Image (cartoon, rainbow, N blue to C red; front, side, top):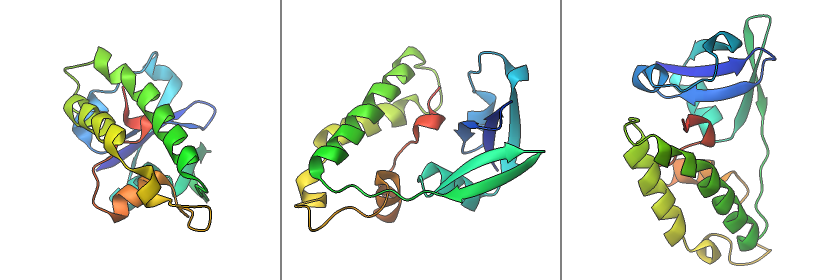
Length: 146
């Protein structure tokens, strides 16, 4: 079972693939968050940046997310932003996803973005995370990071 964690204002603050990730959440004040179980398919849609989740009146709603990368430079910038966010995991080496996140960060350093987006006529018409999902690449969403 997967979980979405919402702040009291209804914004999705964290995502957990399973009970182990949920049990290892690092939240500043747990009473400021609501944890909801969701289907694996809903979790994958959020994790792969195809949908964004919000909580209102104890009901989760999902909105489609449209992402297009029109240049390899834009995709590289996305990678840099991901890696900067994931640096936080180094502070939690005992976290269950630590090794996977570190491996993912290393993978991002080796991706040839020009092979994914060779020119402006061939954009990546999905999120990077959807691309990873479609190509069996192990990835982590920043909301999974402790």
